Image 1: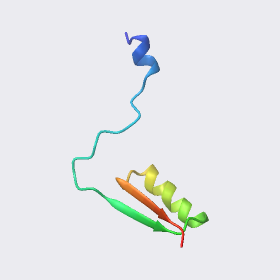
Image 2: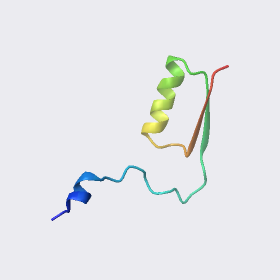
Image 3: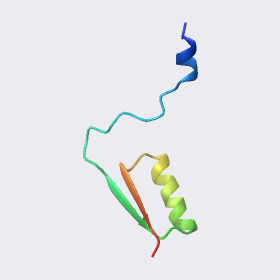
Image 4: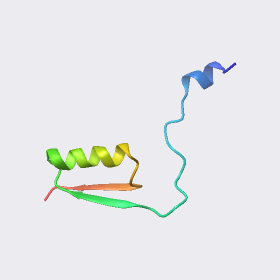
Length: 54
């Protein structure tokens, strides 16, 4: 049976990637840019994500 600590504290971060670092830059943070950002984050496609508003 799980302890109270194990029930209350859950793993939040995924394990560190062992492969190459993926960096993505999204230019424009309007509706389309934010939709792209959310999709990238939801699919865990990048280790680093930069947002640039030109």
